[in-house]
Image (cartoon, rainbow, N blue to C red; front, top):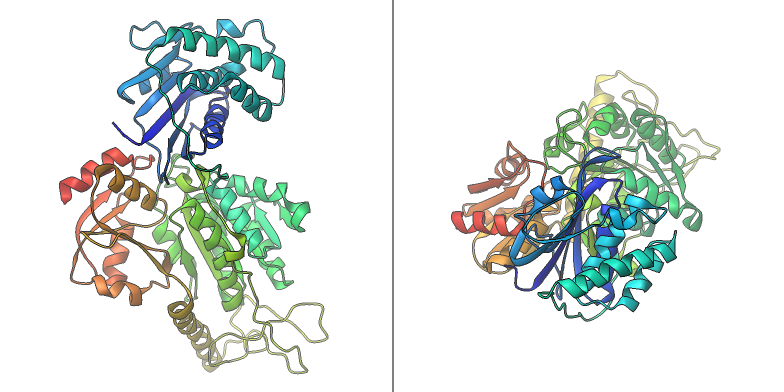
Length: 553
């Protein structure tokens, strides 16, 4: 049993409002001043199948969802069977008695009770929210206010149906749960919303995206606020068009970003190399899902790390960073946008479905973000786009201009003109390489490249959203450990990692081959004692992970 956490799980078919019910349930907890973590699990289907949303809440920062629920509400037999074992001791399962005849739990005829309403089966989600409200002793008045706010169509029917469900639960279930309130009401956002808002706060001008789960909602979020912030948001015809248009926008002086997943980035790789040789400031959001190929489209994994580290042909600088939490995603996106602009190179913000599409209560301060800045050069009579400089960063200028501004996909001289001269080719490689050295020195003094949680105990290395799972597992198991999370993966911050050499470490990640584990060995010279990896498309559950950690500890 998770003593300080309450978890609500709602499951059913796609098209029954399951995801919305989870989101509205989260709002109820937020109205009570609690903190939440919400995870949506859904198949790659518009109708049918099995979807569920799980919302865990606590009167503290909660870093992950729990699969053991206090209350589970299920609309069909498949959901019931999948989640009957996902209950804490003395947990309650409420099921649709029109489709399920079971002795365990409590049945409500959700389907037949909707026959007199226009929305029909689509109202199941409202019924699930009403069942939650009654179970935690949330007042009808407050429930009605939430319904009016969250369900704009058919408000009268929604309230009437919710009242029926609420009264049944209230009168028939005696072992309800009295959920205490928290301190203050906080905003809740998804990881993709945090990325979007962080980019805006960092000075984003243009975003190009071809929809691909789990990055698709970045396009939707930014489009929603385009007119408010003067953004150009474009949905091109393909991922190849996406990256080439973004490079073109960078050439014109726009702070540009694109978003995709592994399959889409595979199509962008030639353009990624183009950004490398043209030294184009460009930020790519790469949100991972299981592969190879189409893989498991709506689930999570961390197996694109090697792809991000080594994508593209030839030698060129790329900056690669991965946020651990939804809050981190906000600040890191702005920081990455600034770095690619300062150092005139492509960068990748590497994340996963688990962070992109999960939601979490956060405290954000826009004043802590960084406004992306170009290093603008003088546009004089002898402007050289690729001027040899001590720091490797050449003067940047944008049209309109009286001088020629030339970006070139071929190797080029300082002016940007194509060359096959051996000396110039070597010099240009050296120039770009010096930029990498300059970046490392800048990061040492100005960038927090590694996050550390805890100050004693065994060393646990992890990265990305798996960090949240590790932190929650440690809390659940009351395990004392020090968690080290490299934020930047390229350039790899060896200056902050080398202190852990010759010490036994535990690595936790989500890839079959242990790509992060191998990176720590290769770039960090670390000694890995144990690898805990998961690769079934599902994020770590804190309870299961705490057991695995205690086994190796």
